[in-house]
Image 1: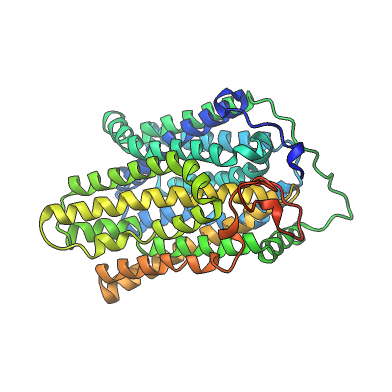
Image 2: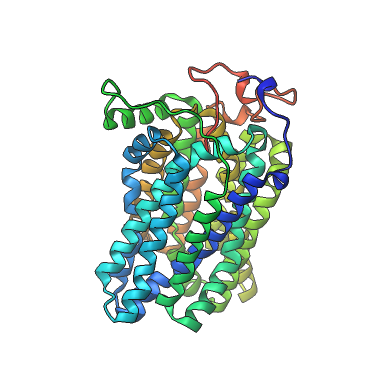
Length: 440
């Protein structure tokens, strides 16, 4: 791909297609924050579920990710991927609406709640494996970082305001009825997605001679393993996610309460401050990327995301020092995760060729998301054996070691996503067995 072939960058705020997509994702993100509160509260309040039963609810949402590698291979050969994304939104809306209906009829059960978690999780995997080829052809290559920054800013804002809005709705309407708002957010997202004019690139028509679904899934995994950028980034992100789930939010809250002696209100305030850090990070990520380079920004984020929890783990002294340490840890981690995610998503979008995007996304999700429950289990075991403070310190150190995946790879030397850019090494400046293209 030549720089001459790339259209001149325009402001994404003047791009109506992207603005509709951004609006659809923003609405959906705020709706998600409501369901994240409402589903566990339905289980606990209406169904008197135990802690173990609630943990299964979370596990079932993530379980479909283990099949992402196969689903990605299937999506790759489908035409009209935009319709698949709309279908995923509609399925999630329909399934969520069964909960308030069953609640009003007095028939809601834990089994239904589990089914809703499983189906919405599967629809989410469908959406996420269809997203990369859509994003890559919706947004100009030169605007990848800017677009991911805007999408991440909306997600961060939803974590700042979403829980408060969700809590107020649940208190006013009850948890099952509040789920209607999330269902409506998916419907709104589907409507906005439908209004985006999008000419999809041609997809190869499947024939008898084409490889099987499992063969295509294997090709996606092999592509990731053999690609120096994808291999290193997957190792890095998997390590980061494993150790951040070792120090899961549940353990952090438990540590803050028991060891730091903080009240629920102070803990909530600290977590809210952390969300503002993520919002700030999403805003400043493009400027830092231009100054440091895409690859170095990823490297900084790989350390800044997991390491700050050590600040809280090492905290001692007065109440304000302990509370301030937790808030500082969450704030810095929020900035780190945005630097990491925005630049890494943009880099992936630049190195994966058409025809491989959904398969690579599926392989990525299977490993990246599949390791998260394992990290949570290991975290619980370490907390039992060594205590909460030691577990958090191990998680901070282990997460920071994810940088070791990046250092010998080409990633730290990548400055921009534009081939042959004059400011420094770009994606197109080094030879590769694959044609550098885009993905998210």
